[in-house]
Length: 338
Image (cartoon, rainbow, N blue to C red; front, side, top):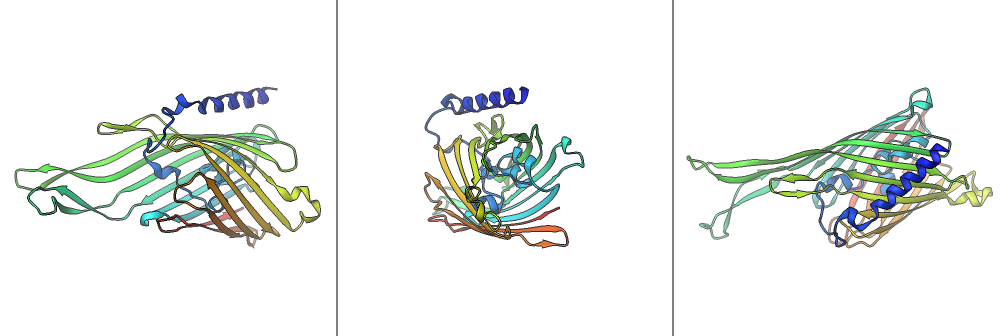
């Protein structure tokens, strides 16, 4: 009885997040910073259009719904990947999870996201030049997120999970003034804070139909000098089901996972995500996904392979996302499961 009361309480909490006053004004454009922590990571999830809130997972769930780790089918996994993002921005990410011999202890996880923005040209206003400014050198912004997560199944159908992340972003240096010797004085723009993710996961009992809910990037307001901003808080609800469950004769060789997520982000209008994953013999996987509304991102495509080598399951995943006027995005992940 207690677990169902808890489930109801979490749902009521979720509804409160949907209220406009929770997120401020209804026109939500560019109201958050440190956006790198909301970029796609795991290639399997990206290939499905990021519809991963209600998908049973391993350590990849730390990037979407920590509670989904509790129902993962492996005791241990580790993954590393790279996301070739727009504007030549490169993401390196990794995750791992571990379950003790006694499942009652739950499952523990670790996540890492590191961003390299490349070298940028720094300029300073100078009215004495024809251009009105002059170059003063290059700088290299960076960002990193390190998280520790935990998930536990409170019953055979219901799990909860959370993650604490230390987030830091270094936007490089800013020219401030000239010293007595005419040398440029600069100031570093670096900021760090803690962010929190929460999630629940529920197996409905009807075939493989699952329900998931997550709140990601919850944090206090942070400030660069005089300008304050919030992190990209995002609330998601999702459902997922293997549709081949409805056709038992095909289930031995085929599966088709259909997932739908609805998102309520802090800095964008509400979004609908629809994604799917077809697998043959649980060895070859084809994926696709779309989301609405979007300005430049068009759709997601992906594929994966699941060979097994001497008792170790290897997962190789790739996702492709065309991005309109920007360059296309390529996401690769390699995962080991035990």
